[in-house]
Image: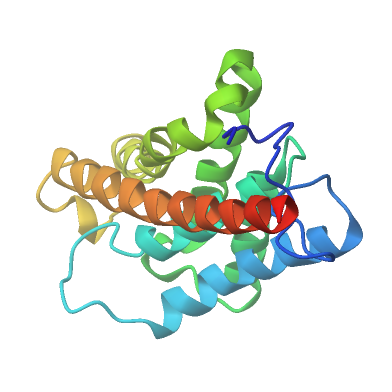
Length: 197
Protein backbone atom coordinates (compact mmCIF):
# COMPACT_ATOMS: atom_id res chain seq x y z
CA UNK A 1 0.00 0.00 0.00
CA UNK A 2 1.42 3.40 -0.94
CA UNK A 3 1.69 6.03 1.74
CA UNK A 4 1.41 9.08 -0.45
CA UNK A 5 -0.87 12.02 0.13
CA UNK A 6 -1.02 13.89 -3.16
CA UNK A 7 -1.93 10.81 -5.18
CA UNK A 8 -2.98 8.42 -2.47
CA UNK A 9 -4.01 4.95 -3.57
CA UNK A 10 -6.01 3.94 -0.44
CA UNK A 11 -8.89 6.35 -0.91
CA UNK A 12 -12.24 4.87 -0.04
CA UNK A 13 -13.42 3.74 3.36
CA UNK A 14 -16.85 3.01 1.93
CA UNK A 15 -18.69 3.95 -1.21
CA UNK A 16 -19.20 7.52 0.04
CA UNK A 17 -16.22 8.37 2.31
CA UNK A 18 -12.70 8.93 0.97
CA UNK A 19 -9.61 8.72 3.15
CA UNK A 20 -7.98 11.48 1.10
CA UNK A 21 -9.04 13.74 -1.72
CA UNK A 22 -9.20 17.25 -3.19
CA UNK A 23 -10.70 20.28 -1.51
CA UNK A 24 -14.48 20.18 -1.84
CA UNK A 25 -17.09 22.14 0.09
CA UNK A 26 -17.80 19.24 2.51
CA UNK A 27 -14.07 18.68 3.04
CA UNK A 28 -13.54 22.44 3.59
CA UNK A 29 -16.29 22.45 6.21
CA UNK A 30 -14.66 19.45 7.88
CA UNK A 31 -11.27 21.22 7.98
CA UNK A 32 -12.90 24.29 9.55
CA UNK A 33 -14.65 22.04 12.07
CA UNK A 34 -11.32 20.45 13.01
CA UNK A 35 -9.88 23.90 13.72
CA UNK A 36 -12.83 24.85 15.93
CA UNK A 37 -12.53 21.51 17.71
CA UNK A 38 -8.91 22.30 18.58
CA UNK A 39 -10.10 25.34 20.54
CA UNK A 40 -12.98 23.49 22.19
CA UNK A 41 -10.66 20.72 23.40
CA UNK A 42 -8.09 23.25 24.58
CA UNK A 43 -10.69 25.03 26.66
CA UNK A 44 -12.44 21.96 28.09
CA UNK A 45 -9.82 19.21 28.35
CA UNK A 46 -7.51 19.43 31.34
CA UNK A 47 -4.31 17.41 31.57
CA UNK A 48 -3.17 16.43 35.07
CA UNK A 49 0.39 17.54 34.25
CA UNK A 50 1.00 21.24 33.78
CA UNK A 51 3.61 21.00 31.01
CA UNK A 52 4.10 23.57 28.24
CA UNK A 53 2.68 22.37 24.92
CA UNK A 54 0.57 19.59 26.43
CA UNK A 55 -2.36 20.52 24.20
CA UNK A 56 -0.21 19.72 21.19
CA UNK A 57 -1.44 16.14 21.42
CA UNK A 58 -4.96 17.04 20.34
CA UNK A 59 -4.12 20.24 18.43
CA UNK A 60 -1.39 18.75 16.24
CA UNK A 61 -3.30 15.48 15.92
CA UNK A 62 -6.30 17.27 14.44
CA UNK A 63 -4.09 19.47 12.26
CA UNK A 64 -2.32 16.41 10.82
CA UNK A 65 -5.58 14.56 10.29
CA UNK A 66 -6.83 17.55 8.30
CA UNK A 67 -3.60 17.61 6.25
CA UNK A 68 -3.95 13.92 5.42
CA UNK A 69 -7.62 13.87 4.43
CA UNK A 70 -7.24 16.77 1.99
CA UNK A 71 -4.69 16.97 -0.82
CA UNK A 72 -5.09 20.75 -1.11
CA UNK A 73 -1.70 22.43 -0.54
CA UNK A 74 -3.02 24.76 2.21
CA UNK A 75 -5.15 22.23 4.11
CA UNK A 76 -3.12 22.41 7.35
CA UNK A 77 -3.26 26.21 7.16
CA UNK A 78 -7.06 26.08 6.83
CA UNK A 79 -7.28 24.01 10.03
CA UNK A 80 -4.88 26.35 11.85
CA UNK A 81 -6.70 29.45 10.55
CA UNK A 82 -9.99 28.06 11.80
CA UNK A 83 -8.45 27.43 15.23
CA UNK A 84 -6.96 30.94 15.33
CA UNK A 85 -10.19 32.68 14.34
CA UNK A 86 -12.29 30.54 16.69
CA UNK A 87 -9.97 31.32 19.61
CA UNK A 88 -10.01 35.02 18.76
CA UNK A 89 -13.80 35.11 18.34
CA UNK A 90 -14.39 33.50 21.72
CA UNK A 91 -11.58 35.32 23.52
CA UNK A 92 -9.70 32.08 24.10
CA UNK A 93 -6.20 33.40 23.41
CA UNK A 94 -5.39 33.00 27.10
CA UNK A 95 -1.94 34.12 28.22
CA UNK A 96 -0.84 34.79 24.63
CA UNK A 97 -3.11 37.83 24.29
CA UNK A 98 -3.13 39.49 20.88
CA UNK A 99 -0.34 37.16 19.65
CA UNK A 100 -2.48 34.06 20.22
CA UNK A 101 -3.97 33.86 16.69
CA UNK A 102 -0.50 34.23 15.14
CA UNK A 103 0.86 31.44 17.34
CA UNK A 104 -2.13 29.22 16.44
CA UNK A 105 -1.66 29.84 12.72
CA UNK A 106 2.13 29.29 12.58
CA UNK A 107 2.26 25.46 12.79
CA UNK A 108 -0.22 24.97 9.94
CA UNK A 109 1.57 27.43 7.67
CA UNK A 110 4.93 25.86 8.55
CA UNK A 111 3.76 22.33 7.66
CA UNK A 112 2.22 23.40 4.35
CA UNK A 113 5.27 25.45 3.35
CA UNK A 114 7.63 22.55 4.11
CA UNK A 115 5.53 20.18 1.99
CA UNK A 116 5.50 22.69 -0.89
CA UNK A 117 9.22 23.49 -0.55
CA UNK A 118 10.36 19.86 -0.66
CA UNK A 119 8.57 18.16 -3.58
CA UNK A 120 10.17 14.78 -2.81
CA UNK A 121 8.57 14.89 0.64
CA UNK A 122 5.09 14.56 -0.84
CA UNK A 123 5.73 10.93 -1.74
CA UNK A 124 6.49 10.06 1.89
CA UNK A 125 4.45 12.73 3.65
CA UNK A 126 2.69 10.29 5.95
CA UNK A 127 6.02 9.03 7.27
CA UNK A 128 7.62 12.47 7.61
CA UNK A 129 4.70 14.39 9.12
CA UNK A 130 5.32 13.66 12.83
CA UNK A 131 8.85 15.07 12.60
CA UNK A 132 7.87 18.19 10.70
CA UNK A 133 4.78 18.77 12.85
CA UNK A 134 6.93 18.53 16.00
CA UNK A 135 9.21 21.21 14.53
CA UNK A 136 6.17 23.26 13.49
CA UNK A 137 4.68 23.10 16.98
CA UNK A 138 8.02 24.19 18.46
CA UNK A 139 7.65 27.48 16.56
CA UNK A 140 5.23 28.56 19.31
CA UNK A 141 7.78 28.80 22.15
CA UNK A 142 10.32 30.23 19.71
CA UNK A 143 7.88 32.98 18.74
CA UNK A 144 7.06 33.59 22.40
CA UNK A 145 10.77 33.89 23.13
CA UNK A 146 11.14 36.40 20.29
CA UNK A 147 8.17 38.36 21.66
CA UNK A 148 9.69 38.36 25.14
CA UNK A 149 13.11 39.46 23.91
CA UNK A 150 12.08 42.06 21.33
CA UNK A 151 8.71 43.32 22.55
CA UNK A 152 9.01 42.81 26.30
CA UNK A 153 6.04 40.42 26.41
CA UNK A 154 5.73 38.03 29.36
CA UNK A 155 4.89 34.33 29.02
CA UNK A 156 4.68 31.98 31.99
CA UNK A 157 5.89 29.05 29.90
CA UNK A 158 9.29 30.78 29.54
CA UNK A 159 9.96 31.19 33.25
CA UNK A 160 12.46 28.29 33.14
CA UNK A 161 14.03 29.41 29.86
CA UNK A 162 13.22 28.56 26.25
CA UNK A 163 14.81 25.08 25.93
CA UNK A 164 12.34 23.41 28.28
CA UNK A 165 9.16 24.54 26.44
CA UNK A 166 10.79 23.79 23.07
CA UNK A 167 11.50 20.22 24.18
CA UNK A 168 7.99 19.65 25.52
CA UNK A 169 6.41 21.18 22.40
CA UNK A 170 8.54 18.86 20.24
CA UNK A 171 7.45 15.86 22.32
CA UNK A 172 3.73 16.63 22.40
CA UNK A 173 3.64 17.76 18.76
CA UNK A 174 5.33 14.55 17.63
CA UNK A 175 3.00 12.39 19.75
CA UNK A 176 -0.16 14.07 18.46
CA UNK A 177 0.97 13.87 14.85
CA UNK A 178 1.97 10.21 15.20
CA UNK A 179 -1.43 9.27 16.62
CA UNK A 180 -3.17 11.07 13.74
CA UNK A 181 -0.96 9.36 11.14
CA UNK A 182 -1.62 5.92 12.63
CA UNK A 183 -5.36 6.57 12.70
CA UNK A 184 -5.34 7.76 9.08
CA UNK A 185 -3.25 4.76 7.95
CA UNK A 186 -5.72 2.38 9.65
CA UNK A 187 -8.59 4.14 7.90
CA UNK A 188 -6.80 3.97 4.56
CA UNK A 189 -5.98 0.27 5.05
CA UNK A 190 -9.60 -0.60 5.78
CA UNK A 191 -10.60 1.38 2.71
CA UNK A 192 -8.06 -0.43 0.54
CA UNK A 193 -9.18 -3.84 1.82
CA UNK A 194 -12.84 -3.03 1.21
CA UNK A 195 -12.10 -2.05 -2.37
CA UNK A 196 -10.13 -5.22 -2.93
CA UNK A 197 -12.87 -7.51 -1.63
